Length: 268
Image (cartoon, rainbow, N blue to C red; front, side):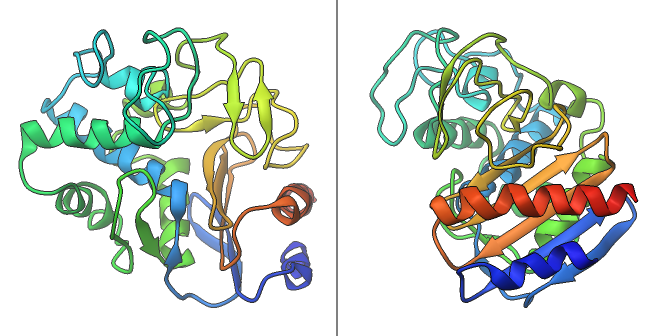
């Protein structure tokens, strides 16, 4: 896939990118070494929570986190919890406040029903069933996963053709609490700043880290360690990326260009 030739010009020492469809990897660039996923971890955490919902361990609309908030609020970044501390900045459901702390509260709540550690629960619920043997949760459920691009590609394949929680995925990848504005980290205020259940939704956001030609139904996440995974159900493709350089202006420039090149090549 010549689109991946673009990766060689990126201002990074290490970059690994995989393009995936529902059957598996179509093409890959770079080494398959374990790198930090940063906030792309939230996709694993969201799936772990959704598996717990599927099993009946927790309910999406039961109370969790700050007063008045639910599991659904925490997944959708509408609980009112601040970005990286326990402060409450808003009543639940009023604003889209992207929150690492909210995901940590969510993981803690799920463990009150399941026991063990969240790393163990993630391994049992998501990593092992998907064959992601090179990935582990080494820190916060909001940002602590480490693994190779081959495992991130497996996650993309799962999200294109869900097997873990197929009945919940339509809800998880559509807008929760529609119409709320908020800041998309790295790309400024978006109105609306639409989000699913742990999955960031492209919709009509601009600027954005995906391509101009990604469909509005595209969903996924990116991380501050220069990582991303997008899934475009209309194109039937996912694109996974890990790098060793923190997100910055360089990524905001080259990621959308790569995404558009991948989509254009697939459409030929």
